[in-house]
Image 1 (cartoon, rainbow, N blue to C red):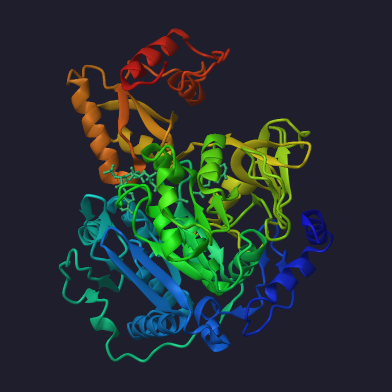
Image 2 (image 1 turned 180 degrees about the horizontal axis):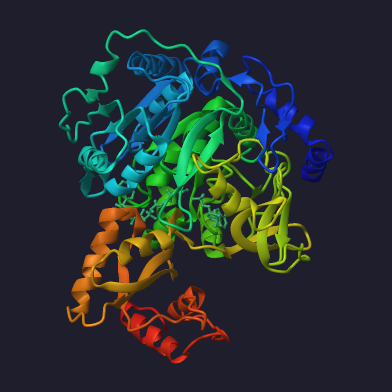
Length: 629
Ligand code: COA
Ligand code: AMP
């Protein structure tokens, strides 16, 4: 069957399609049906089935004779360490860790926050939670204490599992002091913390609250897998929305296992036993789905890479890892290849390595620009596939169904909707637009298994953010179009979310921080184009009347404040002081126009603008930073 047959089969009988896909998962009690639509427009999948995520990712492979296969290969150029963990070893380690958590009171439904760098123990912590039916919430290491505190107060974890430190090129990230700071700020306090002490930094443990990762597991009974309902949350992953308050995307267990397993063959054309590498971070959705769960559920070997595409030690690192660990499928963000290309424009370093085992390269996380795709393809000689998805969905909305049938690649398009996704382009009034016209990208409800059924503790926000604007549809927040061949083109966000080095950030969140500076009366943050990171945040600051402090000083303080409160990952380094912001007569800040000015793109001043002269002031203000033409 080709792609159109498979897509048509799904359309004709979605329940049969997803019940069939569910057979590839071990159920303690198989579900009686796939879709539960009694609470529409809120949908659930496989709700009356019983299943365990850890069993499917680990134990069942040991039972099936894969015990000696490497489950995880850890490659850490920043610590000069490599290690392999077999499925057998992983099962024992995870069962013991789960046993220790259980002994301290962690049970099904309890939340556990995980704050760890790219070490195998991060995956073990996630899987130990899954084993108990506890709901994990991994927080990315590049976020500051305040962001961690916000997540602690929202998820209300019984336990926090953290590492003593992370390692960024040239500096140690002191995780434990960040955790202590977050706990000082948070209202909610966990019952206990477990700290994995790394050689690079041994953290101070607080008597009674903090336990050493090794010591606290000593002599405990290993835990068995706890069956959970198909709709039981496997994890909460916070992502950026329009405001500073992150959205807690809920991932339901059954659908997540079924859908991820389905993608491994159909999207990634990967067979069980092969090595799969997603060069991302466990703190992001790509890390949850394709460093941890999907490759393990499918019986692959996953690579956990603690390093960067460049500088650890050089732009040949990707190629070295692919050769050394016999990687068959490689997945990263376009920005990573832009970084490699910048350091090794002619791709000379590829020639030092044998990439013969690599089958294909997959890109996601941000728009894949044609130059980057062409360069990567020419440099490696491998097919390069873009695919489009979001934290909310957890896997491909649109991609190239290579395992079913590779479709011709159109540069700049992530290709076609996957079965499960009925993607439509809608005009402002909710009517479907014809091929070739730009509009809001929406998915007809229900979304397929594994996608978010709601937001943690925030059903109203879920309805408002995703379901209300276009009744009967899920609003993706992306704008784009479909062409005459049914290919999708993802052009821009329709909200205040920007994408910096494949990381999703909220300009609204940054504005909230800047507005808290005592000299700032009003501000705006927009995403301006950047050759390496795709976008960078740029701040515009209007100061309080009478403020005569040097502008440079205030800008510096604002940059430090965003780093301090959101974290280094915000990459907020560009800001200017302006007298006023361009607005419509009704007072709406013209952020889109500001972006066009910064990027020196063509634009027509909106008819509703209050005073067009401000646009020249904006251009003059950003010129010294190399923007505005
Ligand atoms: N813990 C602590 N700090 C972190 C961090 C982490 N896990 N990850 C990033 N940071 C810091 C960086 O050190 C940097 O700090 P600096 O301002 O002191 O230099 C800052 O956050 C910004 O990081 P980043 O935007 O990643 O920039 P970079 O210059 O360090 O690296 C790339 C640029 C392109 C090499 C890098 O972003 C990359 O490899 N991206 C791959 C894309 C990816 O993983 N996307 C996830 C979704 S697929
Ligand atoms: P995240 O939730 O962090 O995965 O970010 C999701 C957002 O990143 C999407 O809504 C898009 O705006 C953008 N994005 C992800 N993948 C792609 C892609 N392949 N092409 C264009 N934009 C993408």
